[in-house]
Length: 137
Image 1 (spheres, rainbow, N blue to C red):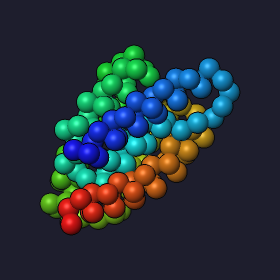
Image 2: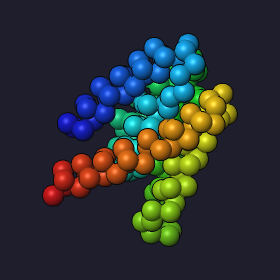
Image 3: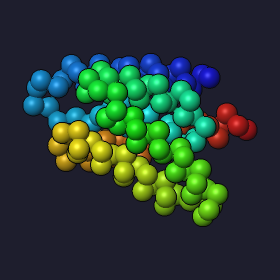
Image 4: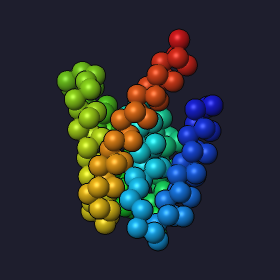
């Protein structure tokens, strides 16, 4: 629960950063999407608190509840399917990460911002996986 609270606060901070600097020509990643995607990939069962934050992300940034939320809702199901059929693998999680970040292009984000979000998601994912492993031990 401690991880969820910290991630929720950082997600709100990321939304504020994106909104504060969106009018300027500053290229930036989607901070909150990177964090929420990393949390979801680090621990599949975090979907029940990640998805409401993702819905808030879509409503605040895109004024639409279905922008990235739908794909984020599919990711836990796809992870469960792949884990049961193929086994736990880093490769299919990387493909789901790429798919989650590529959705930014359809929402009108430039390619550079999508690549920045991808580059931010990987270390956050590693950090979140370590936090979940320490919490389990």
